Amino acid sequence: MSQFSRRDFLKVGAAAAGAVGAGGLGFDLARANTVKQTLKIADAKELHSICPYCAVGCSLVAYTRQGADGKTKLLQVEGDPSSPVNEGRLCPKGASAMQLATSSRRVGKPLYRAPGSSKWEEKDWNFVLDKIAQNFKASRDRTFVGSDAGGNVVNRTEGVAFAGGAAFSSEEGYFATKVMRTLGVVHLEQQARV
Ligand code: SF4
View 1: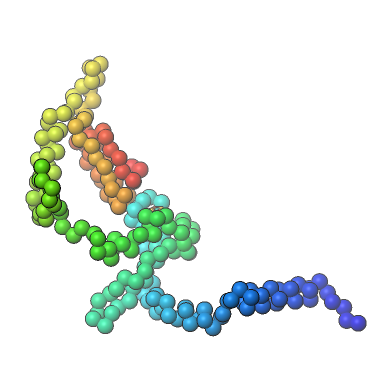
View 2: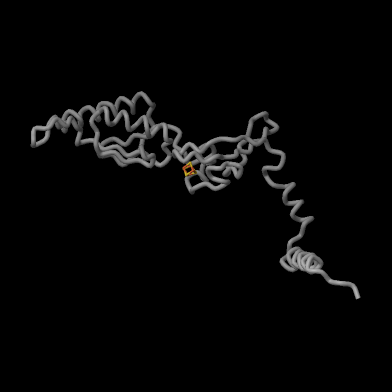
């Protein structure tokens, strides 16, 4: 009678488990290969980038393909599994990075709502930048505090607050913080922890 070694037992066990996994759980290798070939990123160009949203610096993979019209189309953006920083994972904000390029809901022009109005109007950048500068200066002049009750020099602008959106990159957050502090603004909040 032949000996049935521990190694043979493990081989049979692994084969049985594979059979159950492939058949019993409905795994179909041929179908999996077909799905792989029909993925929207099949044969796409793979480009590596960094998420712009915060200083964690998660790596991204962007897949692009050139269309018949010669234009490059962005197909997919996802976490880079080869990155030691995020190992393929992204937080919800990073996972939406593709929307930066493709969302039809992105506002393409500055919108302005005049005091008392219920309507937004499209304006050019010169108009809104001038408006921001004028309003900022008026508020700063009106609320600037040179020294506190104890006679300490504080030079702060109490009538202006700054809120940076979650779409701020680390660099934008750093720049905005520098500008606001220079102008004496002390009420600052934004996603980038600068
Ligand atoms: S925003 Fe999220 S995905 Fe982007 S770098 Fe920071 S942690 Fe990573």
